[in-house]
Image 1 (cartoon, one colour):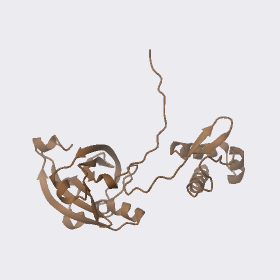
Image 2 (cartoon, rainbow, N blue to C red):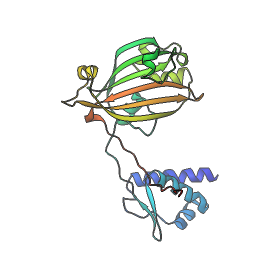
Image 3 (cartoon, rainbow, N blue to C red):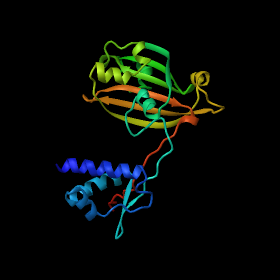
Image 4 (spheres, rainbow, N blue to C red):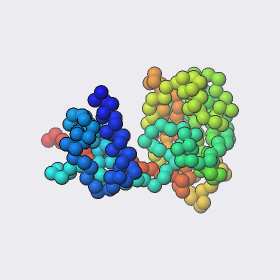
Length: 245
């Protein structure tokens, strides 16, 4: 019951903040008011508020209350804070997208490739180069390496649509987590020939190391984005660690 109340408080406060019913700089209703409104314990209210504080929506001000600090981000096609397929991102952003397969092949990881991708020597993988168009603009090239043993029946037709949809809905693979590294890299010949760079000499390169529920890293992807189309947002809290002297 407490969890249900917690979810209700969390989602309703979050929605009111995003809809600007509670605007940036406003104080939300006091703890006592929320306890009475939702007929719940103070601890339940505090948990919901703490979650919104951790997301950068609220900030507790000693002696004053809880202030709204949320400000909406500019629209961003990609979200680095969650695992999302290209198709899902397109639906969320109401964009028209097309994927063109530049390369699809099966390879065995050798010593040279092992230095570049985090799969063991001898592992059999699918290697894909996929050009992504967003509203007609060639904006991203994905270099995908997928562990072949996790993806029986995989083919180029599937790769042109949604690989994650195939993994989750057909193979029932549970995609759990990913580690990401964002770098700025100089363009290469493939970027220059395919991306709409508008004179840029670099791309935003996002490396993804993705794991399933068995703890197996089944995917390594480097996504190379045109600078005009790449925006990254995050919210962080300063945590001072105790120093040993």
